Image (cartoon, rainbow, N blue to C red; front, side, top):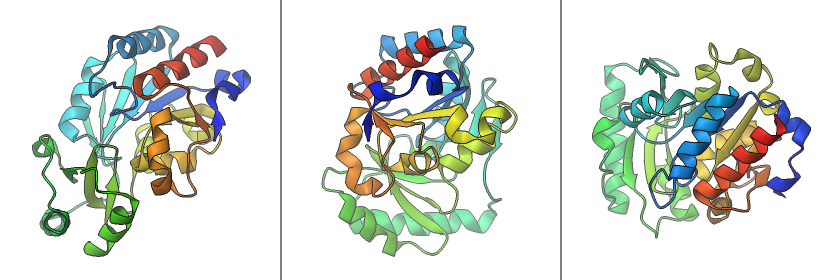
Length: 256
């Protein structure tokens, strides 16, 4: 990883879409601080397309897309569902029949029982994933071991705060590209030239992997390098959480 300060201004000037994770990326201590809202206002005025790509549930994604300035789309459940700025929902990825939900429940129960996990307070707003609070003891080894508990077609991924049981084969990268199809097709055509992504954890790995030249980790991403393996972000900020995000926004706007 290189310091974000070395990100080429000419490369920043080509960015058309700023995509970002939510928790511990644009938040500070679990809240959206005033500085983040100011960043969104400035991005809106500059005409930058903002896409949020989060592990939070569909219900949260709809609220984020509807209320925050500059946010043209919010993609929830790690790429499985999206909402535009009017709150209209689009399900992403392969179609899922009635049997899928029974299988999701069975696989989730297996992981929950094995690690004595607590269901997240926002789980009732989820559609295609089930999520649990991440204990401090749940490390990269536990994450790897948990994969053996789920059936083919399912996976376990982790964010900085949650453990997710979900369908495999469709993650944040696929979700972002699908959601941008009608919003910013020119950026989607060459992702690591037109899209800049900011994240913090191992559920951001698909986007770090896709955007080899234009992915940024806020400094707290250092906690999850073991889980990221060969796919760390290309750059890392000086600041953690929302401070790191603001660092990226300032540079992006200055380059324009």
